[in-house]
Length: 149
Length: 149
Image 1 (cartoon, rainbow over the protein chains, first blue to last red):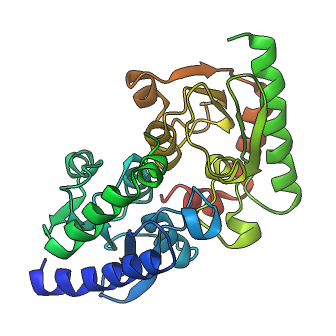
Image 2 (cartoon, each protein chain N blue to C red):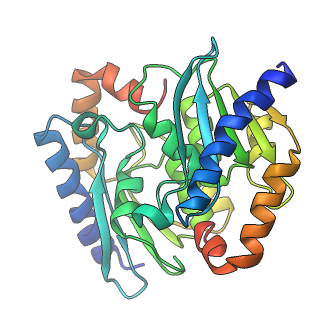
């Protein structure tokens, strides 16, 4: 895909991540885009804010997009490599592409998704890396709780 | 694990599934149990009831169990073989065991979980099979929507 568009979409996910940080939450954001580039839903990790461990950024964006008959052609944009939970979401629902801000601070299931035909666009975005690196440094317990480690 | 206890726990998940059916929903139920057998959370698929595609039975039970530091020793009991989304949840959070009502009407990711060290107890429960078989027969569109097919 076009890198400029990928970075623009990442900006939406990053805005969600930063809003989460401002709320005292875990700063991971995501957004789901339709095949034609229409924004379908966006969200952020809500473990702290809602006391809800099931709402990772990707599942929050998926939820916000509501019920859909098909995810063919859709793109999940996320500030961080998706964990197994969120990778499973992408695979089960046939989301076609995942745009990832960074996979330096956490390497999730995106190689597995690529093996199963999902297009992976890894952006190595320095703002995303810095955001997570700072968060993990200052809140290691919260971060480990969020990934079950 | 003890089969009698597995069937008893499955009864909780099946009650959730039947409650979902009575609400006009997709009849899949689940419950999370602690290492000592304490019930931690239970839930059912809420796609229809809440218009929420992110709440599969297993994610609903996980959500109901609230924030936890560790899932070591826990058991996820579900009426139906977990899809990739729910299998990813189990793997990411280190849930130790999955008790499955049936894998006849849908074969999800439980072989993959077994490969990654999760104990799988498959019960081949005829009530679970009948519940899903009837539902899929009468509501194929809803079912396909729920698994992204």
